[in-house]
Length: 275
Image 1 (spheres, one colour):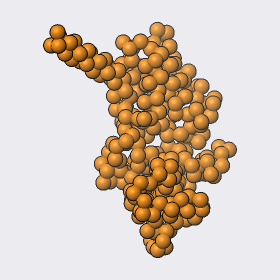
Image 2 (cartoon, helix red, strand yellow; image 1 turned 120 degrees about the vertical axis):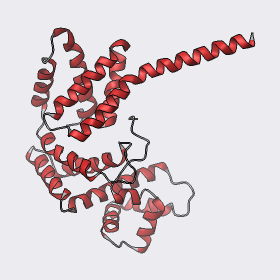
Image 3 (cartoon, one colour; image 1 turned 180 degrees about the vertical axis):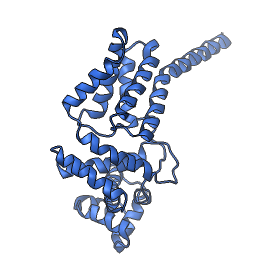
Image 4 (cartoon, helix red, strand yellow; image 1 turned 30 degrees about the horizontal axis):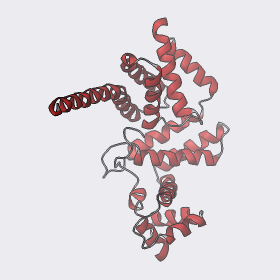
């Protein structure tokens, strides 16, 4: 789980409104009114089994976690459809889809990235819960265009260039940082780098480098993110957020060691008092 996960975050109004499954049931039973409700019903109509599962939860005190998660995914698809219809954001969605198709991908793959961007905006960052961060989503959608052009050759060239920016002694750490981040973020293909990817990379580095070097690894990871930002695959706001995540993750092991030392001291003091 990323450092930001589990906290309330800004999200598209449709997503925020229909986190409550009871409200989804209400719309399904009375029929949709308004663009958001029509988009939500369309997403659920495309999955008849899920639609039936949602309606079957009416009146139940506990909603199965699986159903709740599937409703969030359906709501995300509906929110992405509303984003695509937005006068400003819609143009960015079209550009992203065209870029994915031009690079040899499918329209469905492009839609998946757009939906992921909507989900990321809503759940991955501990920002103002009352505000839909349209500017951040717009930045992410813009990044999908250069991301669509990223291939194995360009990734290898970027890593090689990043590593060679420093002298020989510092290169192994830079290589490990770049490889761990790209494995975490792009193992299944280029996508916007998220907080969880940075956390996963730092976790991997924590097991492969000395604890005394982890702060340097965090700094190198921030430098690599900045390197990628210059290639337009990481936007400025995302870069700032990911930088904070990387710094926090690099400091976490030290905080953990301090907590362990405090617990040991408490145990020793308790033992002394009993004696």
